[in-house]
Image: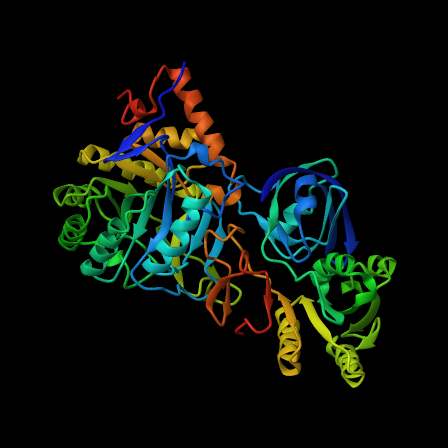
Length: 309
Length: 255
């Protein structure tokens, strides 16, 4: 059986249901040679803001049981260098390759809107969607505050929506009492999709030195251990709103990706798993097709929300 | 860059907490240059564990060699791997040493930091190189037989005086630098080891106006420049140790 692997994420046409999570895949070129790009429907570029940003002090990560805690702090070159160097390099290495979702952030609604507007105005053929980061736990001024108050979130989504016609995905924070009102706010203000989940706020302490391990003191937990929490949030969001969901959080095997799809995701992103094994992208892709064959699904998109109930 | 399924050909405990790992890894071996590193998936750790970076000690005839010290969970687990086990080896990674040198190449290593300097000495030619190697004690002096077999002139210092001169390796290094300067000879520094040693060598390179090539060591996540976890401060801002380095010019580094 030939399986139709195409999915539509709020207007973003993807040739496969797999993407990469922002912050784990650089600007799309770094894993050339190690990751099978033909299995990816999209890659997500690391957070872009107007101006260069240095990120946090070292150490920026620590391995913990079930994953890792990071506080990179959104280091980035700013939008001009992103367009001039990183997008150029991506289009040179992968002409006709996976589409690029650009993750964006800023300190104000106007900054987000300007980044979005300039991304669209650049008219680059690889740039196919915008992911609005309102949930980074590691930069005080950046994003986090927008993701924890529905009124503030609504203004932000509306502001970015007015600035671009590109498919607009909003990446929500997992650490809220209920995801439904945040998802609804995105829908009400013109977002095309939501992505779930960002890292979960976390901390590790060096008990010998009695100090936090990370220079930023706290960070965000990613990796295998967060997957069940992410599945629950995707499930809740899918039931609450009609917006398509890009699911991420602890996908290490095809069964994790299938689980996300059944919970309601339209597409699935891989993140920390690629750090351990760049070959995971191919394995998850093949395993999803095998699952579809075994269960009689002729299109991967039919998996979305297909719980037997 | 390859993610090569490699076979362990030898894996010896060489004393002092150090191990010598030999891998059949033909793709990586044919592409790697001195100062570059490999990112190894440790088989006995959980599937989701991060890889561990190791600089390449030697690469020839399809074989990659690594020298490492058991310092944490990853290296302790790697130590359990046995001959014929398969491991995933991602590489070659990073920016290595320059492969040309004006005048004498002064190689300065501490502990397992001598590993990339051996590969470099083989590439530059033994007659170009002098190795200055330091350790707390004689047990921290690695691969001296290999350097000797290459014909490299080796100068040794140990903190406890158990081998070579007693004290820091900078003493025999300064002696040679003074001799070369008096003779009007050119030289460059190449170093890998603990941060204190790196800084001591970088300071000398800057003070003397000689090129200094410093191999930094940071905890890494991806190893390929994607995650921005392994930052080295430079005059151009926060660089990534894994792809902008691990070898930096002394002039670039901010301590």
